[in-house]
Each structure stands twice: as C-alpha cells, then as structure tokens.
Image (cartoon, rainbow, N blue to C red; front, side, top):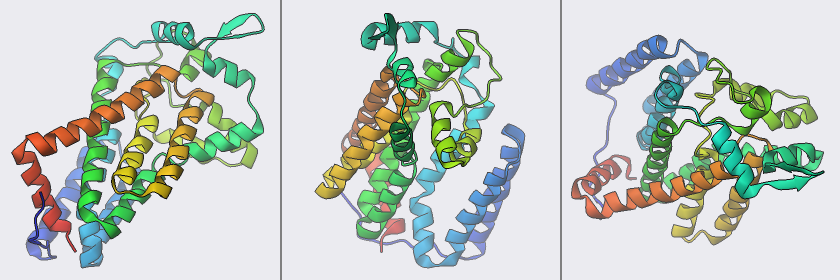
Length: 313
C-alpha cells in the first residue's frame, strides 16, 4: 500500500481563504463552547505559521492535523462533561481496586495509591514527575522523528494515536470514574464543579519551587475521566511504532518511560492500577482497530494513501 504521486498544497487565494475561515470558525466555536483562552490563539498562530512558512513546514502542518484534531476534541470535552450522561463510579471502583491490589500496612488494607502516598520519598517524587512530563513531548517528538525519516510511518503513527484517544474518549463517557485523589479529598460525594488537581505531583512542584504541574492541570478537560489512563496508553503507541520500525535502542528507552509513567500514575494518586490496565488495553485496542481498518477497509487505506501523498518529500 502506498502512493508515489505527490500532491502539494500551495499557498494561493483559495487555501488562504480556507485556512482563514477555519481559524476564525475555531475561535468563534471555542468562545461559545469553552470560552476564550490564550492557548487557542497560540495554537492558531503556530498552525498558521507552519502553513505559510515554507513547503516543508506546510507538509508538517498537514501531517499533524491529526494531532490537532485530537487536541481540539480534548479541549471541547469541557463543554460536554461525562457526568451528565452516566453515573460517576467512585466507591465501587475504589473497593474493587482495594480488593484486587490492596496492601496491608499497619493493620489497615490500603489501595496502592494510599500506601505510596504514606511512603513517598523525594527521589520518587522527582522521578515520577520527570516521567509524567513525558506523556505528550515523547509522542510528539517521536512523530517529528518519523516525519523526518519515514513520512508514511509518521502518518500511520499519528492516526493510530488519534484512534487510541477516540477509544479512550468513548470509555470516558460510557464509564465516568473519579480518580484516587478525588476520593482522598472529597470521599464519595459527587461535586460536579470540582477543578483538576495536581494531587501527588504537587510534591514535584514543591521540590523545585515551581508551578509546572499546577499550570498544566488548570487545562484539564474532565475530573471524572480517570478510566482509562490515557497517560498510560500513549507511550505504548510510541513503543509499538519504535519496535515496528526496528528502532531497538529507542524501544528500550521508550519501554522504561512507559513503565515509569505507569508507576507515576499510581504513585501520584492520579490513577488506580485498574485505570492503568484499562489504558494498556485501550492502546492495544486502538492500535488493533487502526490495523484492522488499514487491512480490511479499502476506503480507509485509500484515504491514508491520499493523505500520504500530501506530505511526501
């Protein structure tokens, strides 16, 4: 499968009108759905800058439209919180976690989150924070590497990444779930206007006297979207495509990062072990779905071929 014909998108009156119209429409729709934010302007400036700067950056922009779609959908989820559509799972998830993975400590049965919170160390605070900071830069950076070295694989990686996210988003709405920190702070009472919380990552910020995670978590879309842990799913997609492209040394590094993120998710009380396992299953399901679409649905393969022709060197 593949297309050797290149179809370049050029800067002309028609493309300028399309890009300008889409940019304005995005700002207007965002204003009514989630309110105006500086991030939206930065995103548009970056996207327009890439489109107009050069032929290479324009191809990069087109390739990363898939990533852009993910980001916009993620942001717009704020306008449609999942707790409106299904019951938020709190006590049942907490008790099931304790039943499966409970740890006896000082005569009390604790969840792994509770145990690790009581036994936290500065070393684990810093290590977990560093791993957790990798959840977007690593996939994004790996995509850039593939764009430079193999644009077909770059495109497949980015589309598979979005498919994994869409699978996760469906589960978010089918099974709203409170994260461990919510139970620790609020018990089993549903407080729908609760803001995002840095939870155990605050110890990383405090250690470095910075507001790194505090600034990141003000951009969260939904408190009750802990199941599955997409933080745990993303590095698996990277690991899979690194291994698929025989980047064995990189695969080892990505494997370490993956396990580090899994541990950090539980250590910082952002996710249960069950959430992490669901994230792993989500990644496997999303990658499998993408591969199925590529090999079984002719129209999907032709769409990817056509898409590839727009970003070929």
